[in-house]
Amino acid sequence: MGENPISIHVLGICSALAITTKIDTAVVMTIAVVAVLSISNVVISFLRNNIPNKVRIIIQMSVIASLVIIADQVLKAYMYDMSKLLGVFLGLIITNCIVLGRAEAYAMQNSPSKALLDGMGNGLGYGSILIAVAFFRELFGFGSIYGAQVITNQIYLGGYENNGLMILSPGAFFILGLIVWAHRAYTGTSDKH
Amino acid sequence: MQHYINIIINSVFIENILLIYFLGMCSFLSISKKVETSIGLGLAVIFVLSITAPANWAINEYLLAEGALSWAGLGHINLDFLQFIVFISVIAAMVQLVEMLMDRFSPALYVNLGIFLPLITVNCSILGTSLFLVERDYNLAESTVFGFGSGLGFFLAIVSLATVRKRMRYSDVPSSLRGVGMAMLLTGLISMAFLGFSGISL
Image (cartoon, rainbow over all chains, first blue to last red; front, top):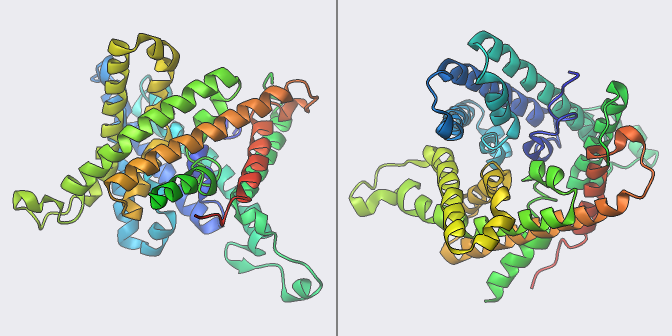
């Protein structure tokens, strides 16, 4: 967690923001990323001594892309509505910098079992931020948590209104910015500018 | 003609690929520290998007989509599921090709844009644009215009963030908010401004 891929290294936020308006999409996305990341780490780690250095990026890409296709097909087969909601963003796991980044930085040098743990750890770290962002956006944007209404009608009658900005894109940027701030203040890392 | 202008306006302002769809955030945040480099990356993205969008459109139309192989007498084959892997390879190959052509014919441009080109392969905005093309059923002309428009939107967003960040250097930001945290909040504000464009159409 101290080396969280999103809040410390700022990798892979492309897809992190678009699907976090509700917690359930964020959870499905997390599962997909954890699966793709750990399997791709293991596969690349097994292949690491046979991959020529010059074409390694292409090979890593094709391994990742094949895994994403599998994830996409599984989702289409068993959770069709969810796959419609995630739309193109599931495909964008391929270009998620975390997956390629871990393959390049870790799986190429380490044994499969270590790479598996690394993949799962990074995937879960990524997911925890996704779910945190989704939690706030759903709570303030829809007044619910994981689909269950927590802000009751009485509060609405008292003049409370859902914050529409949270569902739109700026809300995601603000929440993520604040989370990064909080996490960095806690771990004490900072940039120069 | 008006239709195409509408697509450009839509992809630059209303559905900006960065600010509304969050595609290409990684390079957006890491390259926006200096205005000059952000202009370089922005131009490279416009360039690559205008080439890969029609290329991927053609591949999808004639090779992958349902019934696309009917010209070869294989109308019943649907290679839809290969989209991701084919698109990403086309993008990687195109970027490599553009890099080599640029090196050969315009060394000056290569020196300026060259270092950004490899980064572009893993830029989500490129793959995202190709996937949007398919989802929205654009034709050849529309996808070329859409690719160019998305690139322009990316350029506009990254250059404006770089300019704002340059100003931020003189202000006193809390130490753990510096860098990415602040960039996110600024992007949120820019994105809010862009929401003001929604609803415009010709």
